[in-house]
Length: 426
Image: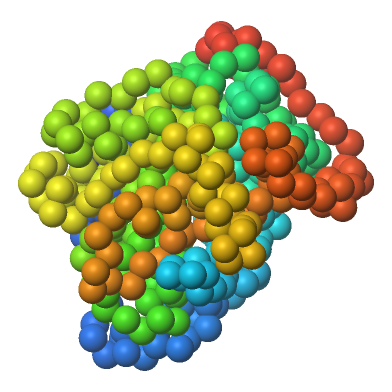
């Protein structure tokens, strides 16, 4: 059985169910597997050309087969992979479109799997939990949709005031009754800090708090699925993923796939002005800065939680990190220029996050590699921002109108942990 230890190295190892519902380890660290299940050469061969649902089932069985019966796990896998993931050749790059889920962002994959994994245990044990989630834009909507009306769950979604797009806010605030949107007068890092503090607050232990952020190992592991699926579709051993990165959960999933035996050798993180990974690559010192606001708001993370998992994956060996990992940052002006140029040259509109990935792909040496740019969100999610920044018109009225069936709800609080505690205790 796979167990999970804390990256803080000062908490006991736990089984998957404990890690799933605890979210953060008692010492404040993130849970990390003590071993990685392996795909054999024959198993990988059999995955070539497999459906997304079959790949999802193969990945989940490898990780959770000792915790959940095979038949139940297969049902979770087939139910959760309920929308397409597509690969499109656009100019010189394959674009891995993770944008066809209910909230039009890559986090739908993790949210759909996570809600079903949690639901399996909750229904089996007839108990209740409170999920506490921080979002820079996309996570909250995905979790709100994934956990909508899931029995025995109450979900609080913290998002930074004035720092999400119109469609993102609509997805965050027109939600099921078991979801409480919380607008925080601060930045994403403030929301994330509150969530982490709450998990280790003994005064809140009766709420059975857990996480659906990418600090949750149960949300992180399903992200392995689309990297394995990409390999199953392309059937190449020279794939280079260029991943737009904010909190680094997405890219950690790619590294975990490599550690399961997938033939991936190198990874590239594409960041905006929030460039903690770039500075670590240059110096070997991890020195997070205050969050900087950018056009690619879902990546506005000054202190990415999952970066510690990336360092753990490379044994905190700086040279090993540099051998397998590249990080580059892109400013807003260049992002906008890339969006305009790709639309003109290829008749393909990139959202601001994927545009950063495309820009970085153009700047790195890809000789002998098959480049795959990960598309993390649909452009329509940022219609107003793209129009203002790039002058490109996108009609999002139909998408916004589709959400109007639910009443818009949110609670606004100051950037103060005590205000969150008061809200949770109401």
